[in-house]
Length: 223
Image (cartoon, rainbow, N blue to C red):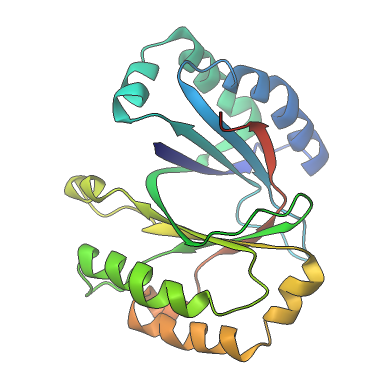
């Protein structure tokens, strides 16, 4: 399958509560009508002490690229796109098409927390080398963190680099059973080793890459 990840900030003038209510109702009802939609998740950002760069992440899965190409010519897709400005600040909307690589194949906790980091490769590193290093070297290193229940790398599809340099090269997603376990893992030697390795493949040694704590909602389960 092919997966789309769409990031966005809420429309100016909406409170977080209004944004989330609209996303869970009007916009959701349009999204679930998309022909060929196999799986759909909404991921609102858990509010923190400071304003988040993004307020939400939508994840949608389709059978293949042909299904996605056919989708853009449908009335349902046109209706969803027309509604996006009611929900999001369109200047912040960013979408990437990715391939998933499961590093830790655990069961997602029903009421757990999802930690998502947007990833940018080191500028001097070729794409293929970056993707291989992230998957084969860094992935197993990060997987040593015992608090991680599930870990999935989302790599931007290779053919999209033929069109230019994407804003992000992917997203790392890890699941934790609780916020307490997630926080405790932050001081673990396993995480320290993982962070030390980031300079080997990430831009700016990974220091300024945006990360988010999210609570996911499965809207359309995978059949």
